[in-house]
Image (cartoon, rainbow, N blue to C red):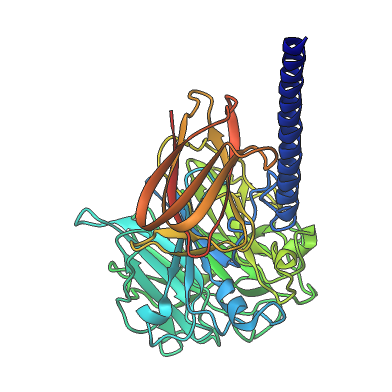
Length: 511
């Protein structure tokens, strides 16, 4: 009898312990579920990209504007006005009056949705004589010494246009002139604001620069859009200044060269279209992007107004009305339009006029005298043109979406940035990672400081696939076995991290 009682007690105890473990497991699961639901809720309203399939704006953690782009070695490099510099000076209740902006933003992508932030071009340090840096325009050319050189022109405030050069798309950059390349001291520059440069190199290797703005002589034909041929060195002028008769011209000059044709794009002004002599072409809407073409660009009479192809973002309800600045370019054989809209103002709690760069796919009929159909701004943006490989080193500053206020700092080498942790949790996301051929067994990251990275695939619900805990003073590559299975296929990867003074440089999965 005694043995039966002991046995029964043992069975009951084991049953109770099993029950207790089940309850604890369920409780822990419920707690984990609550934590993760709160985590997803925490990040729900921080960006138009993080929890959606939107590709615009390109960077969602800072304000950028006035884009330009160049393709190089399988990547597109985009450069922009650093609206965030103004925002940091005046705060969310201030206005974007541009006077504090003295740097340009660099970013690049090989797939059009995951963008690597390369940091800033500090024009205040590179060209201390200059006033501001707005509205860059870039081109590149393989030179006789076998090096590709990048020529970056930008608005030095409204008083002129300056330029920088580099043998790398991310620098280091140099100021070869120590002065504006064009301003009102140059003969033939008879406009108030010789800014907003647009550069292109034709099929003969010759550079061309358009620019201009200011008080118009007439509302319909302002006569203040200018063009000049550049010298072989790309830092001198090789022709007289010529006019481009752009109807209702306002600013934002840009140039392309396609099959022997110069294509000039510009932003129209806000005036009522009281005069319009083109019976076969509709009047352009206010502050949109229109274009003209020419075979002989220094002949003013050779320019032909063609049409408008990009309405103001306020016309299509992608943010409020704003000024308009764009550049179209070719990447991997397809055309895209880079522009800006006020995508992020609501997420940053401001109405100050701070802008962000977006991109749209576009069509260009190269054969039919270069014809451009209408392009509309969207939050959706371009599709991913190739998948991200999670099994090679990827930079932590490469993102398709973030938790909105993520900070990055200089990583110690040109064009390299690192993500910076805080006490509060932050999130980085990359899109379209290819797990279709291999299933990873480990995750590794190059980190520094004291912090933690939790890794999720496809969503922020459920337990993390792996949690990497760091407590090291120097840069160290840490790895951790993955506890849960990642389904085969293509997914988005979320990195949730925190830790004051914690730095996150790069990562990869191992199979």
